[in-house]
Structures are given as C-alpha cells and as structure tokens.
Length: 305
Image (cartoon, rainbow, N blue to C red):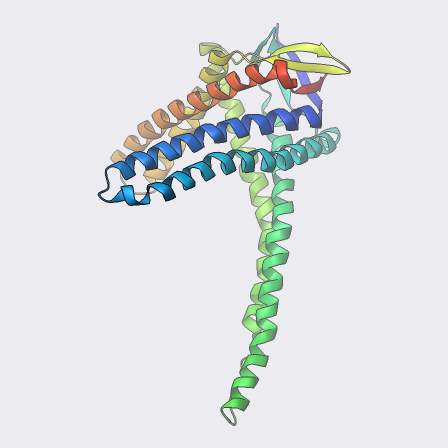
C-alpha cells in the first residue's frame, strides 16, 4: 500500500554539508577528466612539450580550484535552497512522495512542481535583483554620461549649433532591463520550471510501475528522519529513464523546429540515449558518494509527515 509522505522541513546544515561535499567530489572527478582530455590532445600536438610546465600548472590549478569552487558555491546555494524550501512549504505545501516501504512508487505532480518551481523562481528573483539593478545602474550611468561627454566634445572642437545626444535611449533601456530581470525572468522561470517538474513527475509515475522506482532508506533521527542510504541501481535506472524520455521530447521538438522530420527522429533517439547514459552515470556516482559519506558526515535529515 502506498503511503504518501510530505517533506515538511529540510534540516539546512546536514543538507548543505552533504550537497556541497557531493558536488565537490563530482567536480574533482570532472577536473581530472578535463585535465586528462586536454593532456591527451596536447600529446598529439607538435611542439606542445615546450608548454609542459604551463599545462602541468594549469592542470593542478583546475584539480584544486574547481572542487573548492564547487564546494563553497554549493554551500551558499544549498543553504539558501533549504531555507527557501522551509519558508515556502507552510504556504504552498512540500514535496510529497508515494512510498511503499523504501521505494518511491509515485510522485504527486502538483505538490512537487509547485514547491520546486516556487523555490527556483525565488532564487531567480534574487539573481535578477543583482542583474537588473546592476545592469540598470550601469545603463543609467551611461545615459547620464552621454550628454556630458557630448558637451565636452562640442566645446573642445568649437562646434556650434550641434545637437548634443541626450542618452535617453540608454535611460529607457535601463528601465526595461530592470523590468526584464526582476519581474519577467522570475515569472518565466516559474512557468517553465513548473512545467518541467510536472512532466518529470508525470513520466515518473508512468514509467515506475514497469521498471521499479528509486529507493530511499530512512532511519529515525531526532525530530525527523535521516536518509541513510540510496540504493544505486534503482535510483540511477529510474531517474535516467525518466530524464531520457524528457530528453527525447526535447530532441524531437528541436528537430521539428528545423522543419525536417528525419532530423527530428534522429535527434529524438540521440538525445534519449545521451540523456540516459549521462544521467545514469551521474546519479549512480552521486548515490555512491552519498552512501560513502553518510556514515562519516551524516545524511540529509528531513521532517516527514
């Protein structure tokens, strides 16, 4: 029997630590692959040996800085995400999972799409404040500087009866720029995020009865539950299949936009295969890392009802 569990609260500190650690390890693996890739290319370039010292230093920098950057950036992102989730959930409801034992048998569509779209929209709004106000300030500065520069040039060249530019165009663009980033982008992000998460939940509910759902092993912790283990294959298989379907849809739509049905079919198959392989590997590695780190730093802690 399926038991609907709602994630009422995410403990910010454990979530932040685990998320940042996983991203740092994934970034470290990616950095090694990047260095090996470019090192292999350099090996086939004549005269590349003269840049061996530079390539070595660059490789070390990537291997060290990329994981560190991923770790510290995700500390901020994960903490803010958990904080926003906890603030918004009492108003719109949290993520609901249809659990049968340890297996996630279903994902109620509206609940997951609404809360995640709200969180993403608020994060986008915060980013939009920086982009909108920062860009608007620069454009306003340009708008105010143009008449001054024009007057200086006119005086320096003894130009008479010349029309001095006002910079009004940049002033108008300044307002539209702020409006776009602060209002329009968050609204569009909410709409597209809601659709994307809803489609994910819909296809998850369709596919899972056929291949089995991901499994989440919880243990009771203080005032909640701790995610102690994520079985690797069920998580990787279920999520990669669903994302492969979404990738196939994206590929087909992109192909249709070219006006060639053959291209659409080729892209459908290509994106489906690419998404399945890519996300199977990513989810599997992420689950392995989680299971490795959980006994050492503790797992994600949730309040479930």
